[in-house]
Length: 115
Image 1 (cartoon, rainbow, N blue to C red):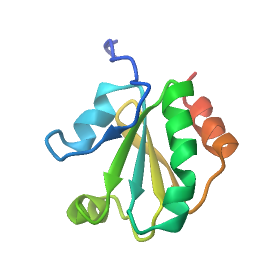
Image 2 (image 1 turned 135 degrees about the horizontal axis):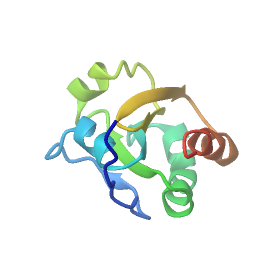
Image 3 (image 1 turned 90 degrees about the vertical axis):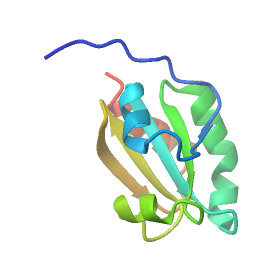
Image 4 (image 1 turned 180 degrees about the vertical axis):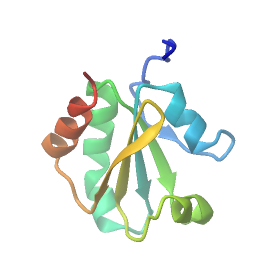
């Protein structure tokens, strides 16, 4: 197994723009939390401060994916409802959380893969 240096996670969420594949972003950082959201989604809006805090306070890179803009990508990851959060560790999707999540729940899941 080779040891590669991964980039430090940014302290602000990355807004997915389609220029870099999500799988590439997932491989660029040790831990990536992909937030599949929609602008019209009430729970997504309620979780926004939590998503901001997780980006700032955890070692995870947070990537926000607008499901209306990237419907094909959402389908590839089996997103059927928003918010859906997919956690990647070492480039692999390891957890899927659907619906409202608390900051503590998400931080615990991120922490469990940060060892």
